[in-house]
Length: 236
Image (cartoon, rainbow, N blue to C red; front, side, top):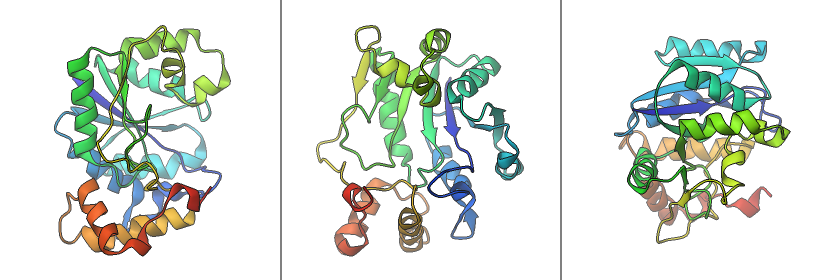
């Protein structure tokens, strides 16, 4: 069984409440969950948010939409993830983030497939970036994350969840997933107002034509309208 854990909170420093911002009338977080749900290899999805009152509305919106929600420490995200693992016996875990509203289920499945066939402890398309930022997918063994949790005393490792795995290539088997065309300069995540406007624009162009649009359709849109593109340097 493959468990996808989507982490999100409303207390973002740059764009507070972004995950509840409407995208074509639906909260951004639900748009992301819609997309993840189309993965052929993910068996269940859990939103991991905080138990801080600031995330009460987020938890309510997601649970009322029919998704499983777990609430844990605000700043210790690693503990949040391990608490989710305690509820299930899944061996394979996918880490996704709620600000990636343009996540592509085909890319998610590609990384999961590479992980399952490769025997790695950790597989990701972020070790060597060739995908647009916002299509990030990390897949790892549940027992490896539990081991990291037992040894992680570094605050950064507790905040960034998988840092304790991929910063130790001598201890864990890492596998990188790349694509032939390097699109790592493209920015499709939502962290600033301009990012949110970009996501809304993409949805307004593509969602009505094909609700299952993914990376290739967005790339074609940007080729037709190059002025729409956001790049990493634009917001750095």
